[in-house]
Length: 279
Image (cartoon, one colour):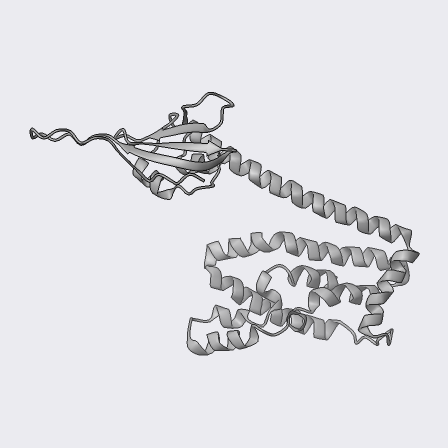
């Protein structure tokens, strides 16, 4: 139970396994910040050993008949901490401020240190192999146990597949948000054509422009024809015409209506500014 709780606590807050949360929670004075900067370069292996040590410690302490179940419970605690870390820290920061996260991390470090010191026994090394020999033994284990190879391949493929699906869903969610906002505005409308002209950059895609204008562009070219031409017009009848090739912006033009002068002077001709050079 202690090991499972330890596995959850050490990753419940991202700063929990560092030496700097106590200094970070203090007011922004010179001594605390200086101490945090001194401790920051300490190697990660020295600052957060709990996550790496708790799993083998559980395997050593558990009876051989129940070793798999015990290690599984510890890994469950670690994964729960990873999943809950952002939720817990975000909730605490929203309710009591971001410093409360580091204060809680400091208290948790102190409690965890005392619990580990009082509850965990001393361990006698079971091997005298060097670090290089231990790493090399992984090759022998890989060759000896086919089940381990299958499990490693399965977990690796699942991890890669899960990451790809996650990024695809994030992209799809952003796309849907952009289209939902564009559906609430008239086609080809923009709040300020001048501001749009200033924000445009060569090479951005059509969806990026739609996200900036929060409206679909008024098509000026035939469907499937290259280049694609779209126009966005604001309330003053100024408009920006964008030219896309291969889905990327290559040229745009801002046109403002003539200024109506109440004198007898001739009207000013339309002007075009903000035109990008041809690629």
